[in-house]
Amino acid sequence: MALDASIALGAETAYGTAASTVDGYEGKGDSWKTTREFVESVGFRTGLQTARADRRRIVDMGGEGEIECDVLDAGAATLFAAALDRHDAKPSGKATVHTYTSANTASGTSFTAEMVRPKASGGLVAFRHVGCVATTVEFTQEVGNPLSVKTGFDFQTVTHGAAPLAPVYPAAAFPYDWTTGVVEIKRPGAAAYTPLDVTKWSISTETGVKTDRRFVRGNPLKKLPVRAAVPTYEGSIEAEFDDATLPLYEDFIAGAVLSLRISYTGATKASDGKVSGLVIEAPAIQFTGDSPEASIDEVTTIELPFRILDPGTADALKLVYTEPTPAAPAPPAGN
Image (cartoon, rainbow, N blue to C red; front, side, top):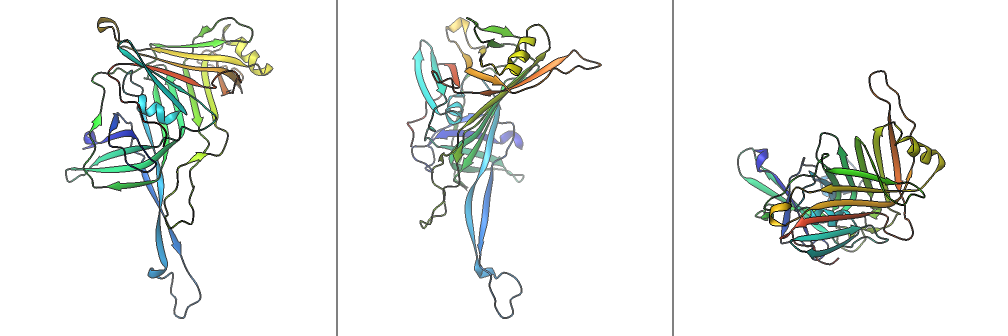
């Protein structure tokens, strides 16, 4: 049954070399699909009816998949390492502080994603996707729901039939949700951040990596994706149109550059001295729209999409994830 399915992720020591340990994630769906193409030869030939069976070669093109899950206050370190360029982990009392940032080069680390699928006839089959590199990332939060993250991956190839790896889950973890989140904005010239009441926010990333690096080299498998385009970091906030958001509309039409900070307090803390938390910072954002929208059956609202920009003096995007120790193992250095 579907309750037996699982998705896990582990860092590789070399691109396409399967990880030996993986962290388990409570995925929301199964989108891991392999792709095959055919090299076909067709030419003039007496009696040809259609392409001949012996003139086609199947080619492994790898594939794509994503991990979509709620963000827990423990166990998400490997997933965030796949999503962002740089990762630094340091102990702090009974916690581990993971700092992830954007950079001018991709991390160079690839991952193994193992999707275990149950058979209707009973038993499990593990599909091991190697050479996984993140291509997109999206965080989403709205009132009434947990904070969620969706990371899209390109992978080199997939095998199946081996014994499943044993995924490592945190001993205890609690989801971040809208009740513990705080969104803060710092407007031009302001000395401090100001809390902003929002009903929904999102941040998304396109990593800009080239994933189709194939060559005439006696091997159809792609090589490690590398950054080939400028990454894009975007987002959006939704709120009521009031005295706090009118200035933000004015910042939009003026093209002002602001700072954004989003903070969550984790449930793991207090009695045993362990702490958890999540902070996302973007020191330079610029709104790209939109005008307020009135309604006949609701208060006037405003949606403000934005671009995250390089401030020139700091990281364009930083995520600090504090989880209780023992934490999920930090991934090895880039391959």
